[in-house]
Image (cartoon, rainbow, N blue to C red; front, side, top):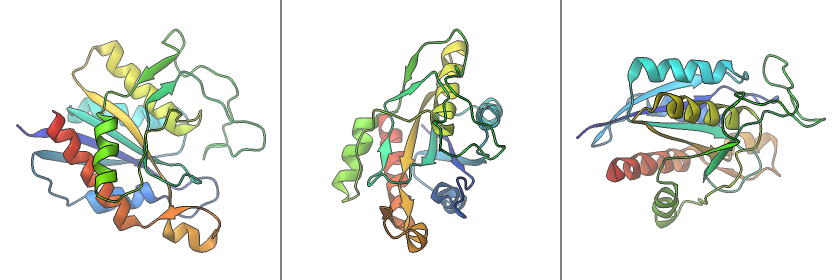
Length: 208
């Protein structure tokens, strides 16, 4: 059985010139992984528009699995997210999205559950990455920014439509390229992050 997997990354944001998940999408464009059919999409860092675009891609491609990827600068490992919460909020002093929007304490979807759990095999993904020597851990917070917004909207879309799609979100640290300009920021090299994404895809295929 071939597992159709839709994978998303993001454009740069917050003043950074690069986003490692964008580089990962470029690298996966011609990737061949046994048992998987891959499609990638690059999302804008705009509240709502990012999720609208990813959901449109889901409706067109009809994947079995969605793995959304984003940057969590400051984290030291690759972190599959356990849960998305139904709130979008940018604390004072933080950066707005790339359209200048700064929501505070707003629901993502009125009337939907407070939280929705990833349906990806996140523990197995972490175990498989760790076994390959890649820093990885399960995260219990996707924040309240664009990444959480995207994860929540996708899971809610699946819930409402009762779709046979497994989905979740993975945060990646800053890349070594970013750390050249910000030496105090924890980072991992892009080749290692790409290996991690390959491992997660294989884990999902094996679990399907």
